[in-house]
Amino acid sequence: MAVYTHLSSEQLAELIAEYDVGTLTSAKGIAEGISNSNWLIGTTGKDGSGARFILTMYERRIEKSDLPFFLGLLDHLASKGCPVPATIHDRTGAAFREIDGKAVALIEYLPGVSVDHPTTAQARSVGRALARNHLAVADFPHSRQNALSLLGWAKALKSCGDDALATIDPSLPDIAFEELSTLATTWPDSLPGGVVHCDLFPDNVLMLGDEVSGLIDFYFAATDFFAYDLAVTHAAWSFERGGHAFREDIGWALLEGYEEVRPLNPAEQEAMPWLARGACMRFIASRAEDWLDTPEKAQVTRKDPMDFVRRLKLYAENGANIFARS
Image: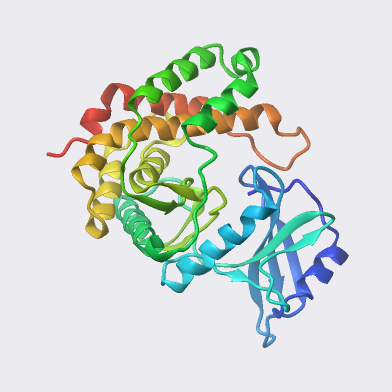
């Protein structure tokens, strides 16, 4: 989440009036994230007792034509009892509106906090919640190509160029393009899949104690392997900030929680080290692109792609042991 576009209090009040949620009482910009502008919205609520929502304006990477998919996915998962925020539809039934040509959506606010240093109990809960999502999409009728797959990583890195990548770190071009070449020959081509989150970092999970209260920010969701989504989550959760230290206990708790709900088949188990390396490449590529493209005045903190270079190195050197069954 972030704030690229500033809306006046009058614009926000007029927008909220289009929803049956009471009148606007507060709006606070949210600085975390990369691609969208977001606000925490307070209203009087339908009955005057107060209510809160998340307002998102779609700024980058997200096409308006994809919004029915993203918002429909939220509604589908919420209807299945998954801890996912439902879309608030306006008085006409529309899931999103437009302001100055940009799409905006109002989303249910879920309680909870994101954790910086998860416990094993929290990681196990995240694994279970992710697996339940994977089961719940079995009858979701839509699909979406993953633009941030192997070809997408190569496209993003090539668009940056070696010279620009080297301004981030001199070693980055060689590391990134050598890994892309390796993954092109090792990437699995037939694993169970469906619509997956693709970006389940700790700041996209809300916790109440040891239990997941919300999975949020589905705007990279796409059709891909379920095990790849698990690998992304493993890479996101199992390291200390900056990718400097691996937390084996968190990694195993996450995997164990997932398999309590949806056991991996042998092909998925065998592919996990490669999927984890691919997960690192996805974030090396997108973070490098964002690092170079993010406007200096944007109210957003850039994320270092070298964080995931460090994670990639560990998976490349120890992936077989990290995912080995005892």
